[in-house]
Amino acid sequence: EAWDSTAGLLADWQYEDDLGWLIGGGLALLEPGPLGEMLLASAAIGLTGRAATYAVLYGPLNPGPLSATVAASFRGGSYSEVAYAEVVRLYRVYGGRSSQIGSYWSTTAPTGVLRSRIELALSPRWGNSANQVVAIDVPAGVRMYEGIAASQGGLVGGGTQVFVPSVNPAWIVP
Image 1 (cartoon, one colour):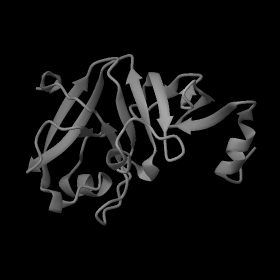
Image 2 (cartoon, one colour):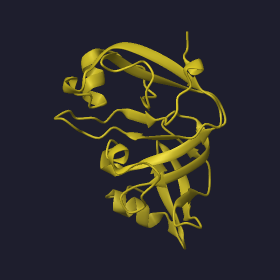
Image 3 (cartoon, rainbow, N blue to C red):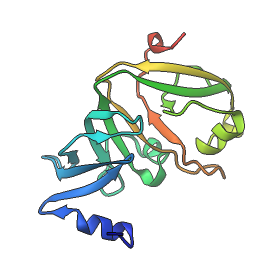
Image 4 (cartoon, helix red, strand yellow):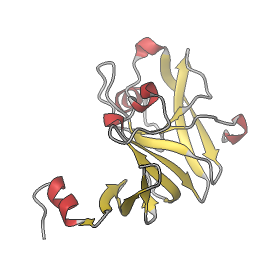
């Protein structure tokens, strides 16, 4: 059976207090938690393509722990707080005034400066030349925030974005 719209898809997946929701290509059931947050009732497949051991979805109607400025860097202010059972490799483009270690990463290996600037909405005015790449292996169990990069500074965004509040330099892949 084909669905005419996302609304039709969601209506078909509503059961009592649970809500079916597409997450990074996977389907998971969500239910309200004790603080009103939406908790996964089943494993989610995050942007890394791995099953998350922990995931909470946040958005404009369910604000999360990130500051409004950081949340706005995700499309529609929506992001997931996740932790994985295995190591996750992330990538960061940097250069110019931007340092090798920072909080903004991607699950996708960059394929060029221009594409990185467009997909991650990295304005050259901010001093990131995006001409260097570093990879990290985030250990299992570390909580991070992932979603789609919002458009900003006239750049489209739309790439995978991961915000890691505290990055250990020992995670850098040689």
